[in-house]
Image 1 (cartoon, rainbow, N blue to C red):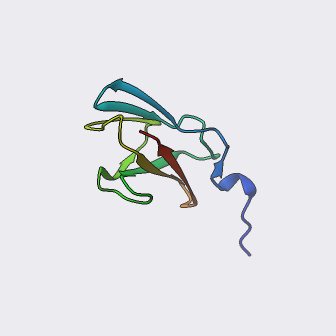
Image 2: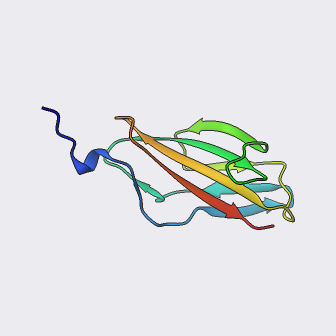
Length: 100
């Protein structure tokens, strides 16, 4: 029999994704503390001009909890989809909107 312990899952902590504009066309997206897991997390990030889109940044996989993205424009709305995947393969996805 297979038992799954709660600590193997990936949890959304409720902490918001942070976006800091470095230049008028470049932003740093940070998601430190957004997810919780007892194992190492791999992140998949995409950014689009429509919700769920990836026309700005197609799925990028990273171990970091931040990413610098350009070219972006402060006057445009962007939709970030961020998925955290743990070593067991469990995952959690959050969506965040950057209002231009």
